[in-house]
Amino acid sequence: MINRHPKLPVSHPCLLLGRARSTAYDTPRAVSPEDLALMRRMGE
Image (tube, rainbow, N blue to C red; front, side, top):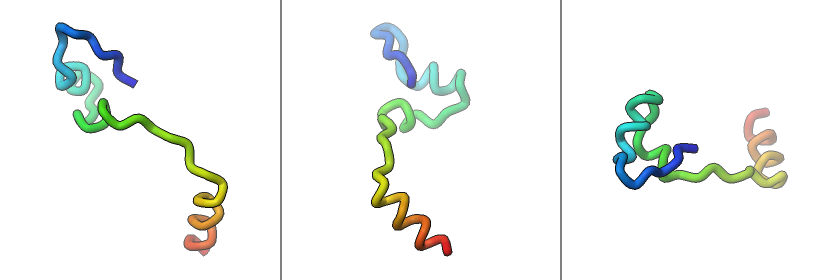
């Protein structure tokens, strides 16, 4: 995750990392076992 620095806009570290700016605001979350099972069934 990108550390937020008050003097540096979010776009600068994203540009340096080659990431979309929207990824700096989105915090990843774990996928539930139920969702994983459903995705597995859909992939069959």
